[in-house]
Length: 225
Image 1: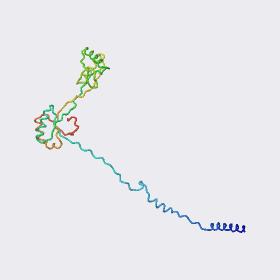
Image 2: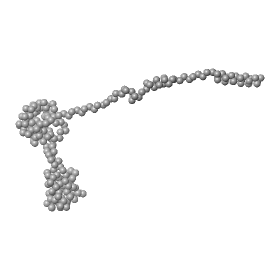
Image 3: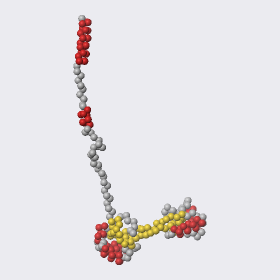
Image 4: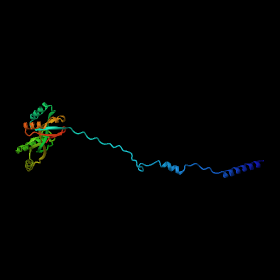
């Protein structure tokens, strides 16, 4: 009986294996290559397409124009500038006097640099004065306790003094100093320029010979010419 049971079990297993081999294979569903390529066709690089996205370009704003004033001058004396300003103000012209410094040349300063102490500089000063060399102690600035040997308007004069000092055994130095000249100008505001007609300028020029007039920025003017 037991052998019969084993025989039937083996027979069933054999039938199951044979049945599986005879059954047709079911194909796995896979998307076709054409569908895959179709999806890929909708994805393009920007460099491959003819469309270029618009870029936002920041354009710097133009700087505001500086206000331009009319200047009348230059007067050697402030009172003359004040007279012109008052005449213009009486005509409802907005005017004010502005002192302006202009470079008028260069001076040449011959000096001895400061020594280790003020006492040493004073002893040096007495020695120079004993030799009849014009000199005095510097009391302020970056050359304090130095010895000034003169300021000269001409370079050759300064170099001549320096040579005499070198011959005497000293080592002088020289520095250029800008010489400024102050003029007084009447500044007329931009909104009042139209009130200053040519006839008025001619009248003022007749009363003040040498009067100059020119247009320049209202601020930051160093020296009208």
